[in-house]
Image (cartoon, rainbow, N blue to C red; front, side, top):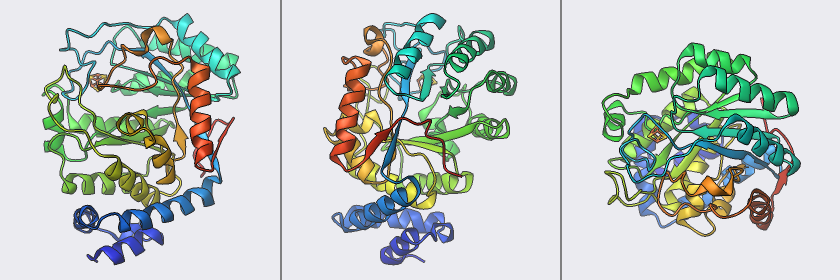
Length: 353
Ligand code: SF4
């Protein structure tokens, strides 16, 4: 199967499982030439699938950026350890718990604790934080996004009550992975972590950047096959945006068109997946997050971090939402979601099985 019309038809009618990486790579090339008609059809089909499964609901996740200290040196990342101009911070347990308490009052029922790979957050420290949030708010989900850790560490945090884990796979191609990461990091370990997390009972999220340096449509086709076969509970797809203090400072950003196209394709390949419309998408286009929802996304992640540290969690340049209080962030997103005919709901927002 290789013409664009039959691939669009297969995706739109739940037959994405029949598509090969060759089909998908060729299809992505075609989409770039056709002037938007295929994107329109994909978006319409993806919206219909999202509404059939999740209705008009959009889930919110309260994002708490717990630390911008990281032992790693990913080449695309503004808080990589080689960036000596980054002003570092870490939040202590009391501050993190009070961010969650404030979020609960604002209607959040999921908290995402995200940070660099900061050795301060031992299993003991993390289990204490997770336990405190879960005992104050047993109706909430705790999502972790703390990078690669050992199986034992993942298990202990799961036993402490963590529900979900986000770990973008970044690329399903080992050579491309090596172009984006230092030699100390391995593609194999990354993928193994995802399988380990699933075995331990987490709801698991993977994902990648659209338009990352050296990325080709063939790489993306491999990502799509990986995502289809792994079938994550969550999938984080946002455009690559360069950071001026990284080796990739002069590479161009990914585009809103391609990111939305891929959101639609992922929705059609994995209908039940929880799909965020990311802050990075809102950074490259003023209505990027609304466009992401119209392309099939059903999650937004307002920032609950203390305003005083938000600017320092700068993974990429010009990141938006760094000056607003948590309540303002939530209200702003509520208005944006409503403008495209959807509703933010007070709900844990688990994946529909
Ligand atoms: S991408 Fe994550 S692991 Fe890599 S340097 Fe940035 S914070 Fe650290």
